Image (tube, rainbow, N blue to C red; front, side, top):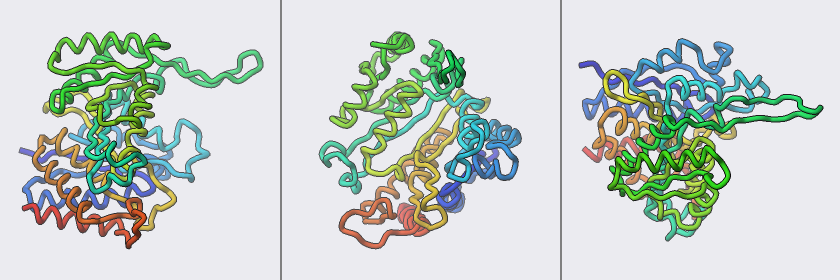
Length: 367
């Protein structure tokens, strides 16, 4: 039987730095757990533009379609700010999502006990927080037509179209309900059915899908109230399902409840391939952080946790994913911190490589 395949796209900024630590973790699993992967590596974002003149080459896109999972670091940076919109680094990321049809974006917002004081909210509101946001990723206002900027009555007009079919809503809803079944069996669907027809359809379709998951407690909430509730009483939520635009906003809001974007992974899942595994791409929530690129300050944990999600959702290795997550929780409990996690008590932060070292040591200790 062949090894599962993984395409690594380090990208720009701190992407290559954090991805180097992930590759060390991947090597550890091959050496210590007899869990080997066929790993290939390629370019995306600004790095791809510098070499090919496009943020994602057709050859790289073809590779992404063939592997079991894609692991991406980060894209973008100030050097590319003045490029034409069609070749900006982010277009490479959007092409991957669209052409792989990665319609369900999973964004966990989990607060490690050791970092509860880092949240902007009171510790008692976030300690033990564990939310999963499922964001529809390939439709909605980011992809709808018509779109663009045109002249109307001698004035510039910007147009974007919010568009959803019931099939697009349904498949994401089923992914969200399936996740809820494996968690606390609570699902909150968020939209703006009070002012948007797409929101009315969203609520109707989610309600219809609920009939197939009667064990799950379903609630509906307007997305603006959802944002307020996330900062008022976030632990009321288990799984949240929402559209592309609201999911973009709400998941970033939930992310900051945990104290640091450097801690948060994500998974984007699509339809099953011939081998039964869903098409999938995993990436940290944080950006390319050009202000600290090359300085050894980047926190690799979000990218490492993204690989843990790959172990769980693409490779059926839930126990090994738990081992990696427990190792990270252990080093944080022991006080290991990169610069973004330093509290008012001060101390000497670990470098990117040093954080990788202590996580690998914790993995060794788990054997």
